[in-house]
Length: 540
Figure 1 (cartoon, rainbow, N blue to C red):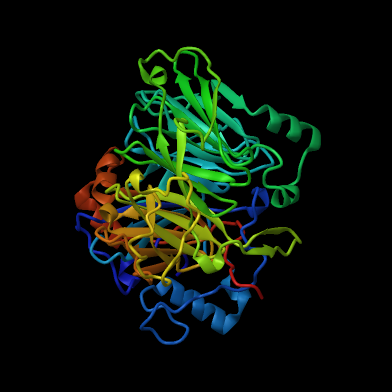
Figure 2: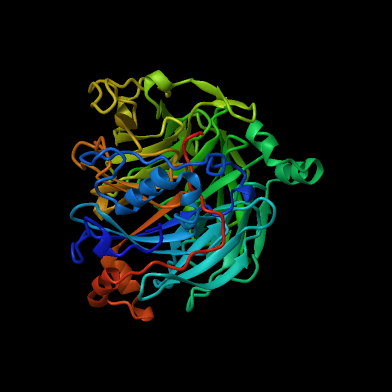
């Protein structure tokens, strides 16, 4: 059986149908890598890597028949027999809250390259997704979950920029902001309060002048982008502080900078308030805020570090609903009182891997590993970071700021063993490394919490595997091996929602809690698609 909807009857460990921690997973997948700014190594290999997960015979994955079938196909027929074994698109899965086992419910021909997924804040039955491509504008796709756990496309609209990688909403949920990596734009769309429909065109598009000028005159190729990641601006995310819900932070990887904006809902425009400069060469990727403490954490892609900040939002920015005029408060993160005041900077890599470089097949010199996603645990006590290259997940404990070393920056990250706790004295002043665990595959691009934080679901892009790890909310330890592993074509984003909430939210489509177990039990494979399968992952 391929990687589409998978019948629980054929799964050796079918998930239970009523555990309170059951989770619905919607996983984005790359479908056409020729359109991407980066290069997943899925076309450059000619066979599938299938790893033993423990307890099975050689060449078998004891807890996933889907992987066993793929392995058998390779053993008997070689690479050619694997064509169309994995179907690409957007994948819907159910995770069992009791065991962490996965069931594939459907794979849906939606794309190209769905790379970010979120729930609608105004219409609970809808999901929004963005698509990544550099040859044209991306799209914002509105989807609805059906009673048989497939996804219907409700609406599509041009996103206003290229390589659309992040979606977010203003405080009143009247506007959606979309971040575009390739051309460093932020577009702003009206969202209909009754239907959740996204406008057919952005009300405004904010551009970084340096990106606009360079793209227009130099017309860079993605090969140039691979070699010079910071030659022009790259807006990687737009994130809202949780304390007031007014200020939106745009992280720019190319400029080593974080910009602060408010949304003028009347005119649908972003109004700049300030910016924070970071040390050169960090390549910031994603910013997350602590839900209760005035703290923020930034994963830096190019040097594989996590920066920890005190958050000092000027009172005038959040005093009222009135957005006010544009401001140009500029500060450096190492300056006391900065909007984002640097408290610590730690590597997310084992000490043995820090500072290593490599030369790609295209002859590009670069770091051997690059950080990917960062997620704060639902408890607020821990956060995790992905490392692409080292293929690992680093877990950190959130600590008080009082413990830093006085210089404001701590670049050390000793690890006493691959999965052991560190010495208690290694307090970073904001975060403290707990352990680093191999991700169960290649290139852990994205992951999310599931089961109320008891599990971490990791999408390994280049090995086309989704792995479920256990997480100890008392110690912050991630299990050393996946509890469950399943093949999913080129996973790049993991959206998670409590299963009971999901079927309740989508009740308008005919889904009910009572019928969901039956739907899972009788899930059937979706029709194959005429797109090239993204399977690959170890060099020939």
